[in-house]
Image (cartoon, rainbow, N blue to C red):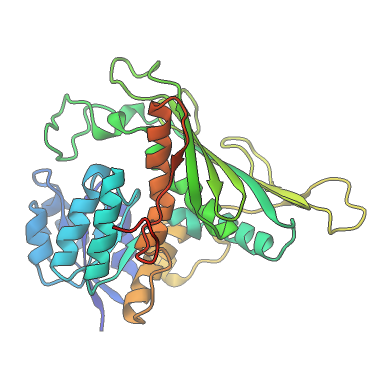
Length: 367
């Protein structure tokens, strides 16, 4: 039986409209966007039966699952409302916007009979999956340090870009401009934590303040340095109002016997692996890895989207149909999201360390 799916938030959600619409085990039956006329237009273009401008009406509709691509500040509220209507949830990043919300989200998922998965698509990027296999085969020894960055010039969407939040208008400053950049750490931290098989336990943060944003108050760049339960140290940098083009991702992982390193955004070149386990190796091995997978299934091709977008959606669909735990469940999603919230608290306190809670019910942090 096909899952009946609805998508909320049709800017980023357009990706999910395509991927869910192409999935053989899904029926895309509804789209929702609070901006007048947007959902109706998308529904007509894509042949979707139902369209809504009221999110509560979407939650009450005859659906099995909702994909949330709504603005970050309302992710927790939207998730809880969907769960209360017995809808499975695939939620875009980050999982929560305030540290207090993390406990609220975890307890709501525990009390629900539905699945919750964080839609961290970088975990499904081809080269990240290759890094995961290489590190966990022991090729670079024990991983002890990692750096990752996500930098992009998004000033074009810091104003005149209404998303339907209170106060939005065609001339207002958006929630993205007000967002501390490290809140959006999951595209960097998620893959690193998955490769290292650990979680953050303390966070220290620093930021540059606002120097570029033309009076919008946007923080230019923000850094989080984290200690992990495995003993490794991780540094994450995020920036979304800086003069860098093209933007993109960077990763490097150091182990006791070697390292893995991606090329910098906009810099042509291969990924590099050096391992002392290879006799007589005098320098790194170059690997022609990419974000997209070299082979695409017919369903991936039909979605018209990158393979990692489809694989993220497929992982969510599989956990529902097979009644298994989501690969990025609420606790893992909070492992990816909460350290950024803590790093910003640290930055606002001059870099003082902040403990990162564990939201699992078996942990003493759980409320």
